[in-house]
Image (cartoon, rainbow, N blue to C red; front, side, top):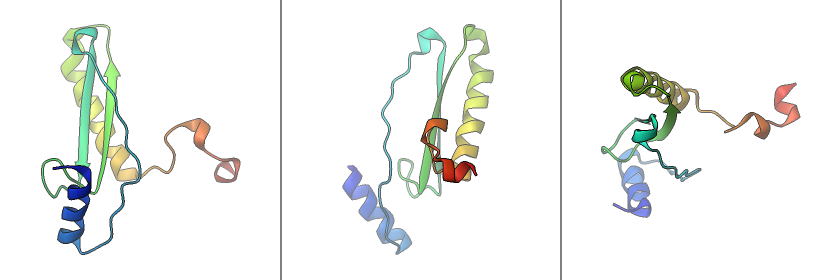
Amino acid sequence: MNVEDAIKFVISKTQENCNLVRVAKSSFDESQGEVLATYLHNKYTPEVGKIGSFFILRTDNQAHNSGVASVAATLAMHTAAMKPSFLAKEDVPQSAKD
């Protein structure tokens, strides 16, 4: 399913207008101790949801990867639930800080 078809599918299921707001592309390397965790909220299919997030965390000790993966999964879930308006501290305008 391509992105356009996924958006049409979500619109047909929810009967609400949907827009793709942001997209990110990244890579990770398990051999370097990196762990990837993803979360999709309100899944319509395994690949399509209302909001999603992902975290890539790194540990110097691969024996800790399962624990780090658990933390990454929790962070991804809570980040999606919070619906953040900004991706980085530098993106926050002064008016939002006041």
